[in-house]
Image (spheres, rainbow, N blue to C red):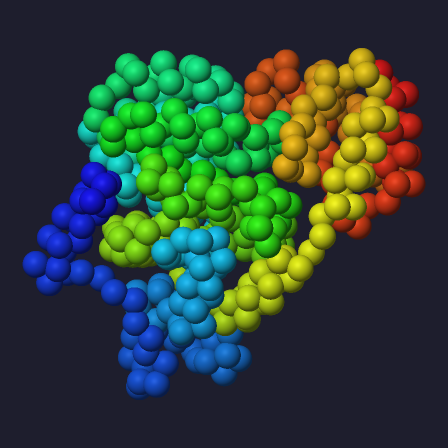
Length: 356
């Protein structure tokens, strides 16, 4: 048994021994004196969850959705959170303690940063996608270590070299990886389920977070990993325990749109992105990567002015400013979509190239 599994099992066994082990149940057929559906509105409309999942907000359909998603990515289990933010602030503090060291990429999402801040762990960051720097930090710390990274970074659009990352981590005892697949899900991998799924069975892969607000087009997130991890989170993760479960219509729509996701073809999106990268003025500093839909143009102090001109010409492109990104790295963040056209790309390029 891996050290992390032993850690989970010990905590769960203690809960069992004192009679406080939490389990999800489904109570739809019982006379209700427990839910928060005080006026009966949710029941009348067959809509809301009416409570947290440990009270009245669980359902057979949701558990089946979790099991189905876990199977698709090759994992033992999945647990649904009501938002990607809640997943990350619920996962990281729960699986760490003051004897843990968290080492994260410097450009991880704010939700991951907040999750780390809420933990008691010692925390360090390595230079963006710099795995040599990561290894130096690993060599400097003993005990349990958690590496936190994303498969596609939300601002730069690039990705870490995951094979190399896991090769490095596997050399160090009691060291694990958590990956956030927010911007890769839907655009790569088997059944369009991202590149992280290739590593879900790796002994050093602790969890993968799959937020559902990007390519899937809805809300929530799956935390995917072992059955022990799922049980542990049900018992100890505060943002899971104390959040209302998803509504019945949302569960139904999630199932539908996840099935749709597996059938989508992202070739047109990547052709448009390639066309844009070929046509953009070479004097611009451009950030992007292989697997994502994001391209950032470092327009610095001109970012807001160019954003306004694009808006005046019916283009919705957001300027990303400090402190969201470092001062001096202000940018226009461009997200490509399956429904954009070559004509739209050419008109966008015309405006951007006239500004450089």
